[in-house]
Image 1 (cartoon, rainbow, N blue to C red):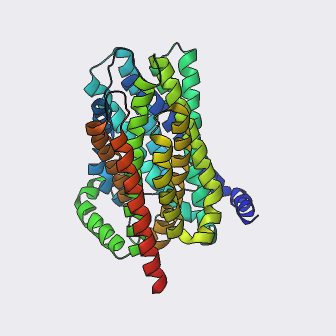
Image 2 (spheres, rainbow, N blue to C red):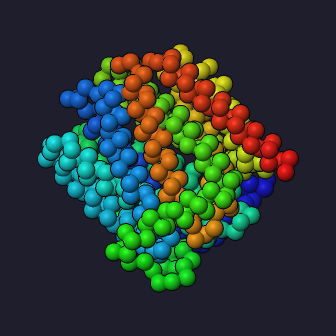
Image 3 (tube, one colour):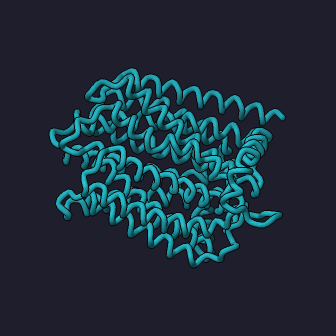
Length: 422
């Protein structure tokens, strides 16, 4: 089988394996950290969480990154990406330790969110850098397969990290601080793993000397404008990003709905609700694995646009069919489907961006990509907060999400036919 052969070839590439190791350790730490935050913010017995509270937490943690995202892009295109992985993960390890201390000290929520925000901000540098660096360790012919394996393996690592966090939380008498400290240790291991990569291997290609931090402020505006102009000239990348942003919006709205269902509709205790959420996350992770296996073959058969059309079209049909019952088993099946749809679309989008955008602009474009992801997710959480009842059961949310998936499928199909005629 061609995909299996390509996967074996990729895993024989020493530097690809090393970059993959950095990703796996980093994203497993993300999974641990996110479970700790969810347990502390959403499932603490003393907190009466609402959809509005969840949306507010997401806004605090994600929206401010929209302000620093352009800075991340400029720096990713000028700083050695290997050093970003090293120092970024070291900084996250230190910040996660600080978060654990804040949990133990029972500080006001705003101080806890400030610490968590710092970890999330650094995370954006690392994830955007991993995507921008991937073409430096694999050849163009295997980039689709690499985009299937690497980000999906990272997502599965995050899921595994979340599962490990549940175990540690139970063993540590439901201590969220202990879980955060586990995440800190994994961030440290990721930093150490990055030292195995040559300093200059991952780029970026620059014509001048590396940008100093104090000079970043002066060039950010010019760099952002140049990145946007470059993206505007790459219709394939711009269209794929637009479709992926809408798909991410849909995923965000359904995520908030599942959180509320787990918290109030499907369980009587906070511990049971957290366990159900963990199961939903695990099932969605399995969908990501399914996407990793089938996307290279599907892209070969349908093309990148065609695969996004198929993913969005499947979601448009299956979300109402499975979700309107608001029962655990159909919703878990829906989580599997949405995991496959979201990751399958992302793999295709990543490949379009990587092959359409010049290396010297990839950092900026992937940072903009991350900003779109965050804004779409938080916007979805805000819309869901306005529409969701206290128990999370909302026909309106399911209907809106289904329509948006259908719009993506129809629009991408039209773009695909337009490109085929040229």
